[in-house]
Image 1 (cartoon, rainbow, N blue to C red):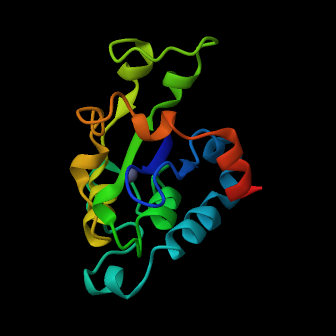
Image 2 (image 1 turned 90 degrees about the vertical axis):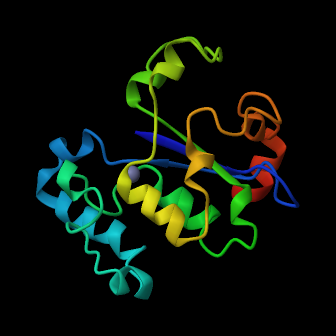
Amino acid sequence: MFNCTWIAEGEDRGHFFLGASIGRYKQANASWTQSVKEARFSLINDADMASKGYTMVDCPASAKGIWFGNCAEVYPLLHMLKGNTNPGAVYGIAVHRKGVLHSQYEDGVSGWAWKAVRRLCANCEELVRMWGGLPANFEPFADMETQGPRAGIHDYTIKDFRSDYS
Ligand SMILES: [Zn+2]
């Protein structure tokens, strides 16, 4: 899975952060997958997490076999949402690997790329709530009604990207 999370309004409008899950990598490197998962969870394992009684394996999505901290959304949420003074301006979208395999870019909202868009899992939905965000902002067609399809992403320029992350 891949995720892009962005700021849709205000001074930081257009800033985004990309994330990915471990995906097939865990099959190729089983010997240290556990360490990677624990390191990822440690980034979100704060006092709030402990007060709710969550652990990496005992979490809202554990019934589906999804461990806390290992989704594509986690790093983007950590950097864009946690501590943000305007958490309602944070939006995101997740795409399954199948959605990025085609050789040609396709941006129609009914095309193959949109069939690979995924909703938040129960863990990520809980993270969004814990950090003051709106789970509805991560629905597949959020940020469309007022600004057009995924306007926050489209307005971002390469120049902005280089100045922020180079
Ligand atoms: Zn998730």
